[in-house]
Amino acid sequence: MTIDRAVWQGRVDTGETGHTLRLHQVLRDYDACEASEVAGGAVVLGFCSDEGVRRNHGRQGAVAGPDMLRRALASLPVQGTPSVFDGGNIVCADERLEAAQAALGHRVAEVLAAGARPVVLGGGHEIAYGTFLGVAEHYGDRLRDEPILILNFDAHFDLRAQPTASSGTPFWQILQLLAGRQAPFHYACLGVSRYSNTDALFERATALSVDYWLDSTMLAHRLPEMCDQLEKKLAKVSHVYLTIDMDVLPGEKAPGVSAPAAHGVAFEVVEALIGVVRRSGKLRVADIAEYNPTYDRDGLTARVGARLLHPLITQLQG
Image (tube, rainbow, N blue to C red; front, side, top):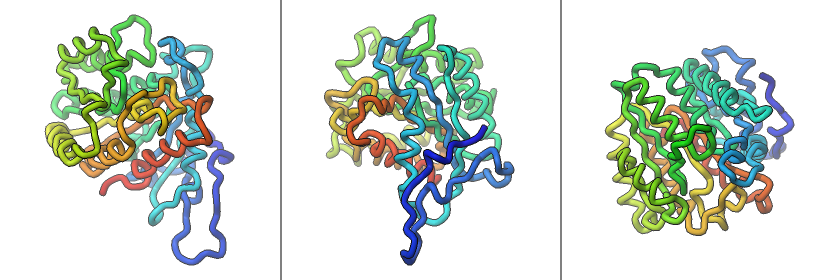
């Protein structure tokens, strides 16, 4: 799978002294490297799909998200010379979402088997089921005894129990997958909006023991308390799958999403909590969803997404 170098273009500080490298200057082609070179690094993958958004009656455009996020990442400075690779895009063609999710799962599993961290750029939140297929393929029956926390920053539960997969069903699908393997379902959804989920979804979340925090409670002055609570959650599991739906952020901070938030969670809160996850040493895979370039303003949402992604890609721990 050939990567598109045209999206990895950025400033080069020729003539400057000191360390001036930017991400586009250290990034390498995943498929051109040996597994031994990739181990311990981060592999960027793209999931070009908004078919799940279409099926969920949302506004489309997230299919173009992965490469726009790459462009926003390209010129960000790096400390040292991190091992960062690009593994190209999985494209959902002809409305064949399930096939695209399966392809993404195989790619994620391949990266995990190489000893690297997959960081997947979406795309609608149907990305989550594809990413988790890879987790399940790699860890297999180990997930029974090595529980994984599915940590979702999102205004929506995405727990719809519908026969057709969409951007609203991924965590219900993951529940079914884990149940079929007799593995526990540890799902936490942080930033849930009381006004973006029906009573039925709240009741389902409660029945499934989903740990959720409302956006209205995730205020900056409570950050130390929230960090402490999150650390306690992380202590109970062996692995973490982190998924970030950009609609968890306030609409003025992230206008370019499929469903902008009227309230949302402040950027500094989301950023700090992601830092807690990263420093735990248990993060195995991450993805970001629902960035919709069609509705972005001056590339703001892309830059916000890039800032959240940057430490996940360049600072694997610490």
